[in-house]
Image (cartoon, rainbow over all chains, first blue to last red; front, top):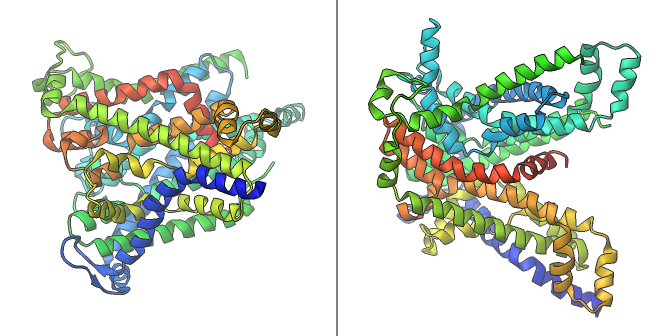
Length: 290
Length: 270
């Protein structure tokens, strides 16, 4: 009797979250599979095409291009935020005056929205009258065309993104640094180990769980990059910075190819899944658990 | 570390902080620079500051309405996610029912599906229901978050059961135990989940971009992106819009800074 009572209460307590999750996650997920099998411009009657959308995408050089750009973004972004975030975390883990204040300050870009970050950097990196090129010019250095130049567009997006996320990586790594038992450092000091060796043999290995988290999250988020690209370059010039999600958006709302867009979103999901599974599997080889 | 080294490090960190903050400073400076002088290249010292760009901004867009929309949507999403999440967390942590682990696994599985997979069918769904381009469309999909459920379930499991039992002996039912015993005891977790939900909603761009057409339902990120389309070369106006949209979240951050940073580092320690 009491058990049945609890099951009834479970329905009451779960319904408020289950209903939106079913309506706005499960249902669209199922219909996304269905849409990916259609040829549909969202207006006229859809036509069933089977796996043709997937076949078309896999054969298209554009698909390879947008995945390549997305990968290029991740590869450029990750080392920047990791090394920068690690240096910051190490500096702010030391007992320096005002470190709480500095942590809060370095974290400020993290709470700023991607659209604002993208606009601010689009202005800073403005080729004609932006600040960065003014400084470069004053120093007699070459002034790139940044987001107006196909060779620099993706780099512009990477710089803005790294600036925003540096504080995030710093906070994660700081938490990891603080979880390292201090007696290990004590022992290393008694053994007369140099600062560099202590870093190499204690800090870095024991930081691997946090490093792993940063890598996993950055790859998942990196493959889904969209906001800052949409605002800074719109995928241009000449598609040089078009990323997968941007292509999904354009296919649906600019080219009226919703079926292909849905299929592309599943290809993206598959890639993220495979990359994440590989990392989960690979972590045994390099992540140290205390 | 010696005293001298520590002070050297302090100087490096402080210089780094100045560099990090510079884009914000530059945004403010640009927004108060009279339009004409921007073409001559940037200058840190504004000789004749003006609020023209802000006036322009509020004329070009229904800014007050857009700010209000952003606040309403973020507050509604946060409140809903905390309520639905705490209730589900209570069910998973405290109630015995058949298929609990399957249902919980189902909740966690929704975390795997990225928004990009959902955005096209979700738009079609709202269009078919004739609910696209409404405030409802901005709020409803964020009414529950599996991540919030997970976070709050963990917190409720950490609440000693003796508290519930004492309340049960006093004749309290599940609703009263939930509202009067459990919720007050998980306030730190609610703060963490609430701040993460607020930030996610405040910064959300892709879904509003897809589902909203009318200027009166725009949120700040969407309004700003539109602004940039209208005033491609008027950076003072675009930067004024950026300043306006940073201020509210910066105020929240000023007061909840500890919780924000604790919340984010908490997500990394799972």
